[in-house]
Image 1 (cartoon, rainbow, N blue to C red):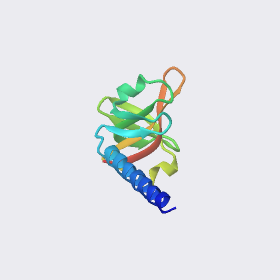
Image 2 (tube, rainbow, N blue to C red):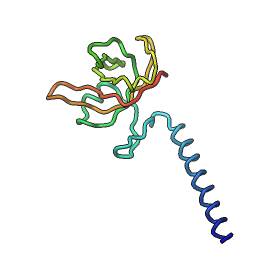
Image 3 (cartoon, helix red, strand yellow):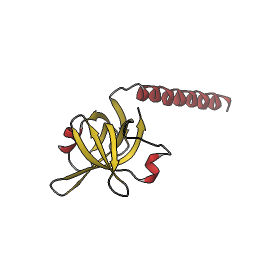
Length: 128
C-alpha cells in the first residue's frame, strides 16, 4: 500500500509540474496569444483586413482601439488597416473601463451576417 501511495504522489507532482510548464509556455507565446478552446489551436494576432477574409466562426485576435459605441452591445473597433463592428456582451468587459485612447487586445470569433456584414463576437479582451 505504501508503494501505491508514493506512486500517486509522484504522478500528482508530475501533473502539477506539467500544468505549470504549459501555463508558462502559453504566457510567453508572443503573438500566439490565444488558445481557442473550440479547436485547441493557437491564433495569431490579425489585422481587420485579414479578419474580413476569414470564414464565419473563425477564431481571431485583434489589437487596436474601441472608438465608439454604436448599439447596445456593438462598438466600432479600429486598427491600422480599418474598422469593424465588435459585439461585446456585458460579462466580457470584466469590470474594465476602456477609453478610445486605450490600446486593447480582443479575442473572439468572426460573425458573418450575409455577404458584406462582418463583425467580431468578442469573448474576452484586455488593455495592453
